[in-house]
Structures are given as structure tokens and as C-alpha cells.
Image 1 (cartoon, rainbow, N blue to C red):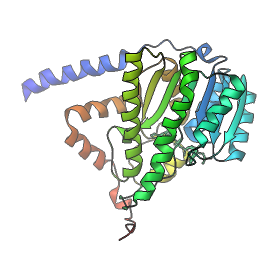
Image 2: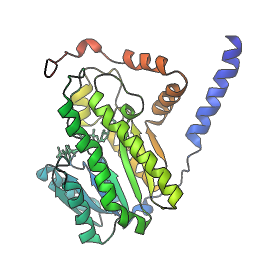
Image 3: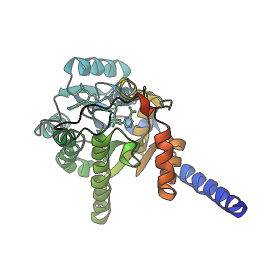
Image 4: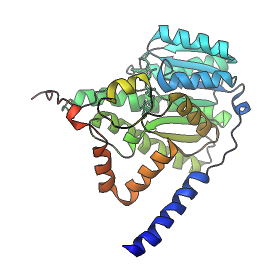
Length: 298
Ligand SMILES: NC(=O)c1ccc[n+]([C@@H]2O[C@H](COP(=O)([O-])OP(=O)(O)OC[C@H]3O[C@@H](n4cnc5c(N)ncnc54)[C@H](OP(=O)(O)O)[C@@H]3O)[C@@H](O)[C@H]2O)c1
């Protein structure tokens, strides 16, 4: 035990130090000036905050979500903040034709694209898995297949600009907790697809970066509403999270882990002590506050 502590703890420290300080840190806001960026799920939460940061950095913005009234307000604010241009296209990613509509709008407006930020999610429940397979099918359409469809449509423009794809995922897509089985499945699908695609881009010398963003609990209205009664963790600020996502995309990083220390430690534990990590995750939930819903079809 003594030897373990003497050897393992300093080794873990070294690994963590290397892990956190090896990323290049040369971001500057000018990198976004005049860039043409699509942000999905931009009517609220982290997507809305990304739009405001990008506007301050003088990017051209195309925003999308379902709620037109909210998008109008976000676009107005982006123009006030200094966006080179800002427009929106509203619609649902449950509609299989909509991803292409959004990308076509960028093509018709700008004739090219520098960054595709895929961030939207459809609504899911936070509770024991209820057996509803149709819900998972729909959620996969919104949270996963629409990401793939937008990537396919945008790829010719991104290849031309040597641009970036930013995929917003979650700790639930690397080390899942309970009560989010459908959501977690869609986030794991993103990792599988985009991590494989990244490999192909390297083999093909396709100079389009793919950044997968692994986020912990963030203080967006919808997340706090869904999980605050059950999770004993303080959420991280959405404004800072949004900025870190943009930075990681511009710097063409493979993955963003935010908040960094929490996510880094969790992912390291996942690799070396997964059962211990699972029990830690379970102990951070107030399970007694989850009221089991009636299973579907039973
Ligand atoms: N907040 C967290 O704690 C947290 C943690 C880990 C990962 N994340 C990830 O961060 C991203 C943003 O999360 P958030 O908390 O900012 O979420 P949010 O505030 O609920 O925003 C979701 C966005 O997606 C849009 N949307 C919902 N259904 C849609 C549909 N069918 N088609 C098109 N757009 C749709 C919403 O706008 P409309 O309703 O107007 O369509 C909204 O703009 C997500 O990928 C999420 O998984 C968040």
C-alpha cells in the first residue's frame, strides 16, 4: 500500500499535469473575424452563448433551432454585439430534410463555410429507462443522424476552406450516469461516428478538423430544470463553456473536456477504475428524488 501511494500518486500527478498542460494555448479572437459559422441549437443555452461570443469576434453567423421568435432575438443581439452578419433558419432536426436546408442556406448566402458547430439536442426524460424504443429512434434522428446529415452536406465547403466541425457531446457520451439511457446512447453514437471519420480524414489528407466536446453539468436553464433535484454537483457557467468550445474548435483540438479538471479526472478514472467511477457517479445522485414513471407498453 505504501509503495502504491509512493509510486502511483506521483505518477497520476504527472499524467494529469501532462494531460492538462500539453494543449496548445494560442487562441486569439481575430481567428474568428470574418469566418462563416453555422451554430445549431442557438436559440437558448450554450448555443445562444456561442452565438454571442462569435458575434463579438465579428464572425458571420447562421443560427438554427425550432423557435423562430427566440432566434430573431438572438440574431438582433448578435448584430448589436458586432457580428459581421447574422441570420437564422428555423426548423426541426427531427425533419430529415432540414439539415440540408440549413447547409444550403449557408451555401447560398456565403458560398462557403468555415465552421460547423453541431450543438442541438431534442427533449428526453431524466428517469429510469421506460422501455420506449420509439423515443430512442426519434432522439437518434435529432441528436445523432441530423449531425451526420449536416456534416455530409457541409463537407464539400469545409474541405474547400480547410474548416472545422465541432460536435457538442457530454460526459454521458463517455462515462454515463443513470437516468439518461436514451440521451447517453445518442452521445456515444456521436463519439463512434466522428472519431472514426477523423481517422479517415487523416488517412485521406482531408484537412477538416473534428473536435468532440465532452461537457459536464452546465448551468443552462433546461439542464438545471431537468436534473438539479437529483444531482449533487454545482453546474459550470454556460458563458465560459461556450467560449471554451469555440476555442477548442478554432485550435483544431481533438477533444475538449469542460470543466477540465473534473472531466479529466473522471475520464482517467474511467480508464483505470471503471467500477469505482460508476459508484462515485451513483453517489453524486439523490436517487430518492427520482420518481419511477410507468414503463411504456407494460
Ligand atoms: N447543459 C448541460 O448540463 C450539458 C451537459 C453536457 C452536454 N451538454 C450538451 O450541450 C449542448 C447544448 O445543451 P444546452 O443545455 O444548451 O441545451 P438547451 O438550452 O436545451 O438548448 C437546446 C437547443 O436545441 C434546440 N432544439 C431542441 N429540439 C430541437 C429540434 N428538434 N430541432 C432543432 N433544434 C432543436 C433548442 O431550441 P428550440 O427549442 O427552439 O428548437 C435549443 O436551441 C447539447 O448538445 C447538450 O447535450 C449540455
